[in-house]
Image (cartoon, rainbow, N blue to C red; front, side):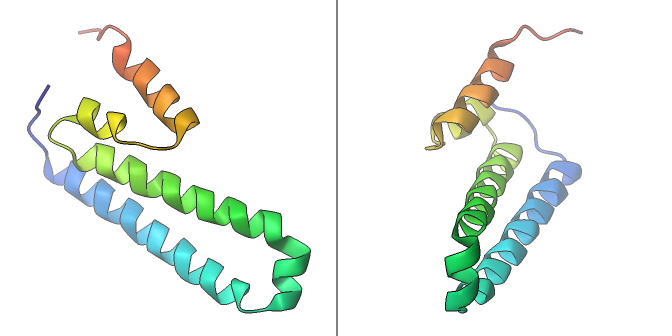
Length: 92
Protein backbone atom coordinates (compact mmCIF):
# COMPACT_ATOMS: atom_id res chain seq x y z
CA UNK A 1 0.00 0.00 0.00
CA UNK A 2 1.81 3.10 -1.23
CA UNK A 3 1.17 6.41 0.43
CA UNK A 4 2.05 10.02 -0.16
CA UNK A 5 4.79 11.17 2.21
CA UNK A 6 4.36 14.53 3.90
CA UNK A 7 7.06 17.00 4.92
CA UNK A 8 6.37 15.89 8.50
CA UNK A 9 7.15 12.27 7.57
CA UNK A 10 10.49 13.34 6.11
CA UNK A 11 11.29 15.53 9.12
CA UNK A 12 10.38 12.80 11.62
CA UNK A 13 12.55 10.27 9.78
CA UNK A 14 15.45 12.73 9.67
CA UNK A 15 15.16 13.45 13.39
CA UNK A 16 15.08 9.74 14.19
CA UNK A 17 18.20 9.29 12.06
CA UNK A 18 19.87 12.17 13.90
CA UNK A 19 19.00 10.67 17.29
CA UNK A 20 20.38 7.31 16.11
CA UNK A 21 23.61 8.97 14.94
CA UNK A 22 24.01 10.69 18.32
CA UNK A 23 23.55 7.36 20.11
CA UNK A 24 26.12 5.70 17.86
CA UNK A 25 28.65 8.46 18.54
CA UNK A 26 28.01 8.23 22.28
CA UNK A 27 28.31 4.43 22.24
CA UNK A 28 31.51 4.57 20.21
CA UNK A 29 33.07 7.07 22.58
CA UNK A 30 32.06 5.13 25.69
CA UNK A 31 33.30 1.88 24.13
CA UNK A 32 36.80 3.32 23.91
CA UNK A 33 37.14 2.93 27.68
CA UNK A 34 37.84 -0.65 28.78
CA UNK A 35 36.65 0.25 32.27
CA UNK A 36 33.28 1.47 31.02
CA UNK A 37 32.87 -1.52 28.70
CA UNK A 38 33.66 -3.99 31.47
CA UNK A 39 31.30 -2.33 33.95
CA UNK A 40 28.51 -1.31 31.58
CA UNK A 41 28.72 -3.69 28.63
CA UNK A 42 25.03 -4.64 28.79
CA UNK A 43 23.99 -0.99 28.88
CA UNK A 44 26.18 -0.27 25.84
CA UNK A 45 24.52 -3.15 24.02
CA UNK A 46 21.13 -1.66 24.89
CA UNK A 47 22.25 1.68 23.44
CA UNK A 48 23.18 -0.15 20.22
CA UNK A 49 19.82 -1.93 20.09
CA UNK A 50 17.94 1.35 20.61
CA UNK A 51 19.93 2.86 17.76
CA UNK A 52 18.97 -0.02 15.49
CA UNK A 53 15.32 0.38 16.47
CA UNK A 54 15.40 4.09 15.68
CA UNK A 55 16.87 3.34 12.26
CA UNK A 56 14.16 0.79 11.48
CA UNK A 57 11.40 3.12 12.66
CA UNK A 58 12.84 5.96 10.56
CA UNK A 59 12.79 3.66 7.52
CA UNK A 60 9.12 2.83 8.13
CA UNK A 61 8.21 6.51 8.58
CA UNK A 62 9.89 7.50 5.31
CA UNK A 63 8.70 4.49 3.30
CA UNK A 64 6.25 4.86 0.44
CA UNK A 65 5.07 1.38 1.42
CA UNK A 66 5.29 0.96 5.21
CA UNK A 67 4.23 -2.72 5.02
CA UNK A 68 7.28 -3.55 2.88
CA UNK A 69 9.54 -1.53 5.20
CA UNK A 70 8.20 -3.45 8.20
CA UNK A 71 8.78 -6.74 6.38
CA UNK A 72 12.47 -5.80 5.93
CA UNK A 73 13.03 -5.30 9.68
CA UNK A 74 15.31 -7.97 11.10
CA UNK A 75 14.47 -7.36 14.76
CA UNK A 76 11.74 -9.91 15.47
CA UNK A 77 10.06 -8.16 18.41
CA UNK A 78 9.87 -4.76 16.71
CA UNK A 79 8.72 -6.34 13.46
CA UNK A 80 5.97 -8.24 15.29
CA UNK A 81 4.74 -5.12 17.11
CA UNK A 82 4.63 -3.03 13.95
CA UNK A 83 3.11 -5.86 11.92
CA UNK A 84 0.33 -6.31 14.48
CA UNK A 85 -0.48 -2.60 14.41
CA UNK A 86 -0.41 -2.50 10.61
CA UNK A 87 -2.81 -5.48 10.47
CA UNK A 88 -5.46 -3.77 12.64
CA UNK A 89 -8.44 -2.35 10.76
CA UNK A 90 -8.28 1.39 10.29
CA UNK A 91 -10.96 3.53 11.89
CA UNK A 92 -12.14 6.44 9.79
